[in-house]
Length: 224
Image (cartoon, rainbow, N blue to C red; front, side, top):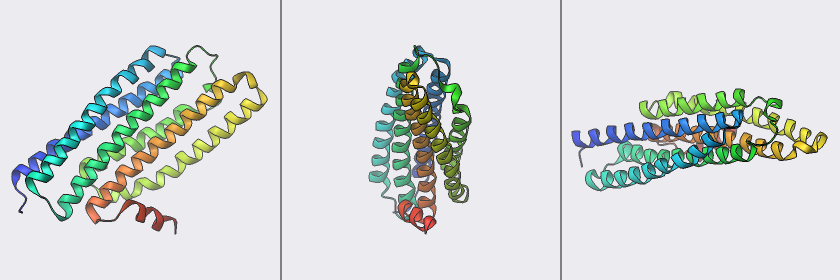
């Protein structure tokens, strides 16, 4: 079936809505990390509440995607783009859940003596946040060249995560009174690493949409 103007308009509208969802996820991430750094339990609680909007958008986008496929019966690159958008929608929803996990850790830490000065959470978060912003940009532009470059940036986040975990384990051993805080901060560090992974997954979906290269096949090829 030939692709018409209505299909293109519906796809553009869907892309814009998914981009807005991604930006909302980014705001939840910002507020969750701010809650950790400032011991702000109220802000952390608001992150948990606002995640409901991401869940609603996730369902709404899935319904729209199914309707577009049924109405227009796209093939080839158009169908791949729709499938990529569907999986990106899921990636964004997962990031909202990860932000909630960070916020819940912030609530647990709010009334405890702070320990986050022992590790550089803002530095790691900036790396992750920049990756997230880039993933959304390449998703909107469907720029497979920029998307392919994003995977390499994940290595630095992995290094930061390992460094932070090593430091926090050492603190737990040497200062057991801070073990609770260190354990929660390790969870936050791992959560940031997972967000970076979701950003890479979104970029890989762009490559799939453009080139038809499956994500896991590309990952195996890049490590060969």
